[in-house]
Image (cartoon, rainbow, N blue to C red):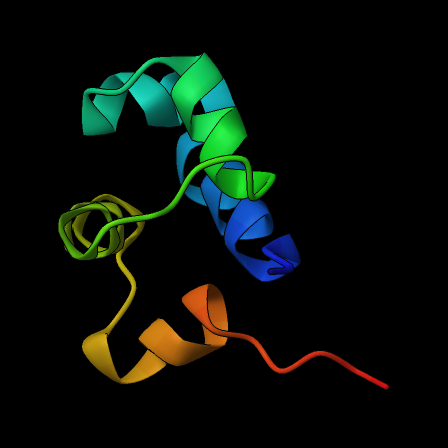
Length: 70
């Protein structure tokens, strides 16, 4: 998975991945692993992260399930 747009939103809203991790109650290491595909992002993560990042439900796909360019 490519989470470039999600990573950008994290910086835009929270300023850093560290601050984002504090807001969602996960370690920065776990956030990094999830964003780098080393462990999965759960449905609960998606809803919690959308709440913190002010992502509308209609836009979830663009942030969490982006289409890869070929």
